[in-house]
Image (cartoon, rainbow, N blue to C red):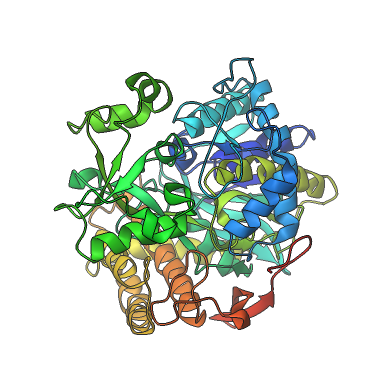
Length: 561
């Protein structure tokens, strides 16, 4: 019924973090398999447009890792694991030099060094960039390097579950989407690099595949997750046409001098962040934009204006070419007229708990990138995500390779494999019930309306009640129209839908638990920070149930004043 594939290191997810992990693991002369849900190179990393933070000091010589550390911790509302932040800011410069060695091309200063621009909540110009397509440049480079190293890549494979034995991860079960056959991976070490879960929200910048698979399969295997209530809403996504609603309008627009104003032509960020204005933290800017819209000062289409027409056409063409083309496609020339934007779900700060070596709380399981929590705390600085993928992607790949070299091949519990296979087949065997598109749309609406930028006890309780109903009533009745195995995308969407419900439950319950406002988590009924909630919320599976507890914030260098 299924094929067993042995490897030393199994890497699940082929975005920026997964590819970097594969490259690093390949240095240790171990067998590496990189599993990609899509075709290699189509990862969400491509959609990270703005840049990569590294304290190089090329433009502002006073910048250094200590300032980057402070900006990241303050920007993260002090909830970051400072041990991880220190690694991020110290190693980000070396990792961008690695990318250059692999062939990445970044914009340059007049004297030939990597150019850097200003991003929100940063003291200095620190964000390295390749126009406004930095993530694409990085992703293309990593894919070329993965191919050059002849890493074994399995494309279009959907990983359903991790396999465990005695508290250790020993592999995974997947569906080969091309053939519809089941694959069982037996691995000495595994890396999760599956990205985020923006698709649990109605309006999002995220790619279609960002359904939170890694959070769900890690949780089911017994891993701990942290900060799941902390979901970042990017202040600026497209408003129209409806088919493009939520599509990212990069922070580079504001970094290059873009101005936000409402329908009355007021530069409204003066009300919310009079000093930092459009370059305040993303949480502050997103709430400012949302407040203008809610209070009736938005555009007729339900957005606000973002304007760069005061900048020179040549600067826009050189530094914002993607944005120029993106809006020209809908009939707006940003050289002459403003964009319409509104907030959009963007990044999960929460995820699997990891230590400094990218180890999760399960033995033999490592993780890197957006699937992890702790690095960004309560609010991620723009530009830190791409750096995160490279710094911790390298550490995860290195850690997994070393673990594999010290390990013997594990044994697999066939009953676990059969359970995962049977769960997947039950969806195909049902003749009626709930279509995955119906459940996903209902969940996305619920999360957007009740667990979005502004949250209340009543709204969160309503969401939790409905999510529990979905879990009990809808998930067991998921079915698909087509019963074939090959390229049955609706079958995969049904399995993703179950993962999405699990992730939504984590987010909503953690948000209800945190009775304060901090970082990206804003409670209208608890609008201020509360010192008793200066803690991290951890979620894990205990006796088959979702369990929550709190742990102290990992403080090393800085303490809140």
